[in-house]
Image (cartoon, rainbow, N blue to C red; front, side, top):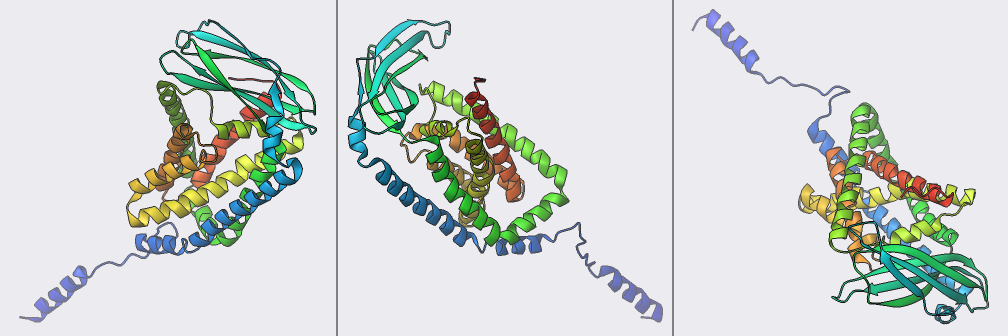
Length: 368
């Protein structure tokens, strides 16, 4: 071996040395990214405890308020009565898919010594082959001793042969707004404080790839509405009519009072997206994914998200729209590389459109 061979071999060794590339400001080391995301999960246990604690605290408060204001609710219910049997008229409709039009009219009296925020009448219709569906009519602000007329028209897939009537009362929209707003608002504020490092990190990532994330939000919003249309088709095939009790409760919150509408905006469009996305996506999704995979995490959080929206009312069949919506949120969270701001954005747009629809209905613009 001569000196030229040694020089050649040295040069070859230099060429074989691995090239180390240090990530620039626009490059993120994948391993460092994983470690960073893991560090940002350290507050997840505290976040879920805050959410549960706030829910329990304000549930106890609402029960205490109801007891102090209305006393024995069973007695109040016993003093809400029909003046006479409802008048039910069935005629042909112009809708071939729902060929019967049912007109309902009834007089209900508040025989209590106190005013009632909402009185409602649920009518369950039965067909001769075992089919059934229910429809609810309500009236607001019924003073003591007042007789109110409850009437409406509903389309049906069958000609009812019998029906049952259930009367009930409910609390004001302001009551539900406050009960719903306070725990979610406090949770959202505490989330932003305790988990501020995680929010700051996602904000930095969002800004770095701004237009791509905006496009993902728009894409997610379209997926949500496709999911809602699909769920409506499924419910129709199952013979389910009307809307969920959760949706009716939200609708009852809306009044033409500007202060009430501002509070509802903060509840539905700001606090709810932050709180629910942190709880169901950042906390529960990541908990499930670490123990299985992202597909199981998407399905599990979608199912839990859907059931949580109906569990207080028991109308579990109405969880289908919420489950499909939750699946979309879970997929968008995964697709956006777990940027919580993206799913909050999709959730915000969906809730804001629903909010505007109800606002228009309050002011007499029925767009359905």
